[in-house]
Structures are given as C-alpha cells and as structure tokens.
Amino acid sequence: MSSDMIISEAIEYVNKLFEGNSDGHGADHTMRVYHNAQILMESYPEADGFAISLAALLHDADDYKLFSTENNANARSFMEQKGLPSEMVGQICKIINSVSFSHNRGRRPETLEGRIVQDADRLDAIGAIGIARTFAYGGKAGRGLSDSIKHFYDKLLLLKEEMNTDAAKEMAQKRHEYMKDFLEEYYLEIGYRDEG
Image 1 (tube, rainbow, N blue to C red):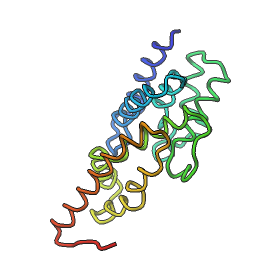
Image 2: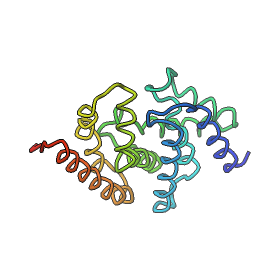
Image 3: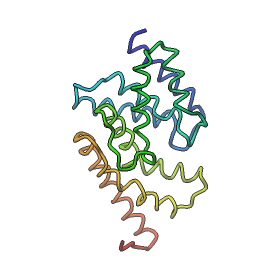
Image 4: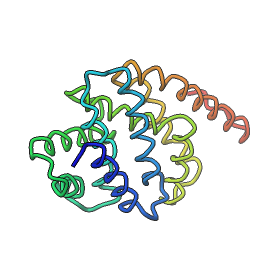
C-alpha cells in the first residue's frame, strides 16, 4: 500500500474515531495539526514526511482524555493493519508520545520529526483557534469563564517559548499577540484589569 493511500486511510480512520466529539480534541483539531505539520515540514526537507504526517494524524488516537487505551493501542492497531514494519510503528508511537503538553512539559523531543509534530499540535492550542478550543473544552468540562481564562496563564501563554523549530516560533508569535489582545479586551469588557 502506498504512503499516500495510508495517509488517506488515516484521515478516514480519525474522522470515524472522533465522530461526535465537540470539545476541541476532535477530527477537526487533528486535521489542523496535520496541516500545521505540512507547513512546518516545508522548512525541514530532511525530515521524514511520512512519519510526521502519520504521527500528526494519529497523535490523539489514544489521548487519555478521550480513550482508555494503553500503549497507543488505537494508533498501533491502525498501523499494523496497514502492514507497517514494527520498527516504523515504534518510531511513530515515540513521536506521538512526545506530543502531549502535560506529559512532556519542558522536554524537547529527541528527533526533528517529534519536534515538528509537537510544534504543530501546540500551534493549534494558541491564537484564535486556541481561544475557541479553550472555551469549547471549558464548556464541556463545566468550567466557568474565569477558570477558562486561568488556562491561558497555566498553558497557552507559555507555549510560544516552548516551540522547538524556528518555523513554529515565527507562526506562534502572531498567535501569541492575538491571545494577549483578546485578554486585554476581555478585562476591559468585564471592567477588571489584572496587574499581574
């Protein structure tokens, strides 16, 4: 089976896997991460594009917030069914496992491929999309506005400095400024200015 065919089937697989998910971690998020990864890869032609594409598409297939699987069971199952060699399956799972913010805080993936996929995911957590996802997830989790705003300080505003690649740092800058502008407007509208 060709690489392009496997990527097409991975897109179908994640669309089925995340059917009905509306908390900001669904198939639309996965496709944006995949798209971000494609953009970042343009700056790094030496990177393994197939591994990056597949890891980006499968990076949330076993997310603990959504699935109670172990050892990347969903991602592994898909790749094994497509006949990928076990060494490649292991390599892609390693990339997937380096993506999560909460599990990899302050740790930089060892490979260029891992750094690109981690950056692609983190880019989708900031900017206008990041703001929308924060409130979508907050609503589902029963968080009020102020708890969702706290998430900006706990995670989102930190991500610009945690990007690995120069290409992602450049993309993150504009998104970061957009979030700061949003917060400034939010505080103006509620009549409160945080001096911190």
